[in-house]
Length: 248
Image (spheres, rainbow, N blue to C red):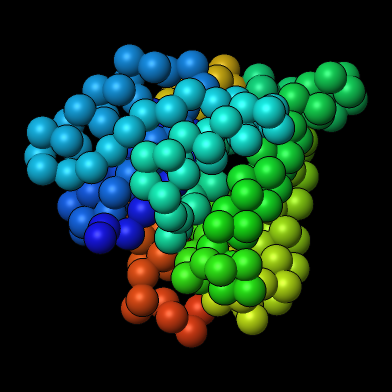
């Protein structure tokens, strides 16, 4: 039977690139989305028409009830889980910290941190060898913002991704004996639609001048790292924070 991968926020960007690469490598896919139903379903159809297996499932990962429904649908369709990719994330318009309100921080942490926690918890229940599972891998999406701080732009997002780094390090130690590896990728400036959410669609072109390699990255380049961390080639890698940032 094919290994099963759940990708949150799979309708676009890094999530969609990861889904395409995973399908090409033989994974059966559960593609989670929040609002982009047409894009998620089109991606599932594309994978199926190419001979793969995929379902698109709507859920807001920051809502515990919806996460439980997402995993129930996964159980019903596939009956197992081998890899969780915690890709769902969001950011708010660029501004300085003193301009931010608490509601903004709550929104950013709900999706980026609480969503990852909820999905990790449910994945562990299914993967853990001590709970009857076969082991597995979790790959969290952090960001170079966790290390750089994103001043004048997204300090709240950077703080949320710092929490993801800590979650990854602690959880890797906690579930190693359960047969589960936990790692994170920390993308740098990647050409995806998320920059428009922050109010600067051309941000990659501006920031790439500060990247030693002189360019922004592509979602497919991040996907390659995610699939490696999920694979048996990374069998002795856990608790890693892998920077994919062009040397920045």
